Amino acid sequence: QVQLVESGGGLVQSGGSLRLSCVASGRTFGSNAMGWLRQCPGKERDFVATISWSGGYTVYADSVKGRFTISRDSAKNTVYLHMDSLKPEDTAVYYCAARPRRYTSTDYGDYAYWGQGTQVTVSS
Image 1 (cartoon, helix red, strand yellow):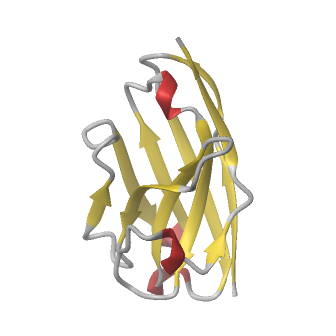
Image 2 (cartoon, rainbow, N blue to C red):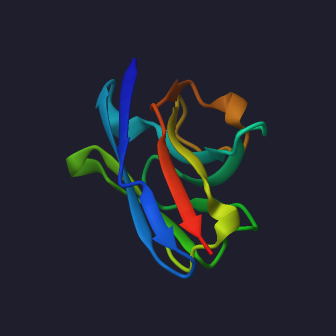
Image 3 (cartoon, rainbow, N blue to C red):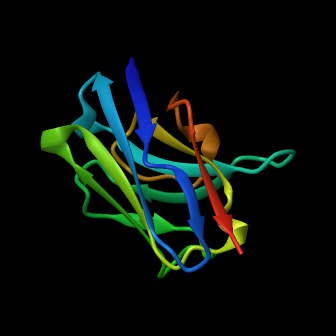
């Protein structure tokens, strides 16, 4: 079992930056690939970014590539999502998720553990 708690969401103007954090507890954090996904009201949960167990491999959705950066600090059991050049279309609830495998996935069905979500709102 892995427990995940996100923080760092909020209201920001278009072009601004935010950093989301996700602290993990429970099972060994270092053996899990981690991901960030987001969901708008009435829409499906979309993949944003994922990072392998070692931090050495990352994958991004095309819509955020070049603007968002995922990273992890195993000593702190924490994964981050640094978001730059935010756009109104980035507005969503952002979820941290853990996969019971070492390697990344862009499919939300491959993630077994989820945080409660944190709201990100980008004003135009």
